Image (cartoon, rainbow, N blue to C red; front, side, top):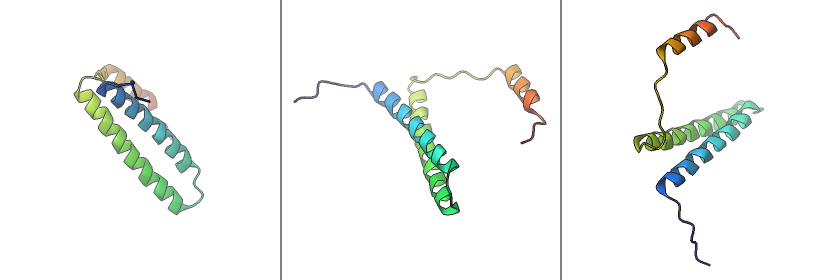
Length: 89
């Protein structure tokens, strides 16, 4: 049966970005529940690699004008800093 479903480059990139976000969510949850340092280190390495892939896809989409971002308002940044300054865990 022929495949009549053709996705545009933008749709494929959007799907790739969504997939990477899903993958990093999973690896993050797994890393939070590791019982051994070796397993934690492995999941952290995987998580780092997947975040890099996610960023690469995001940067390519942004370069093509498919993921627009606006600079943060400096006043709001300063307000957020002041709000959380001095908080400790």
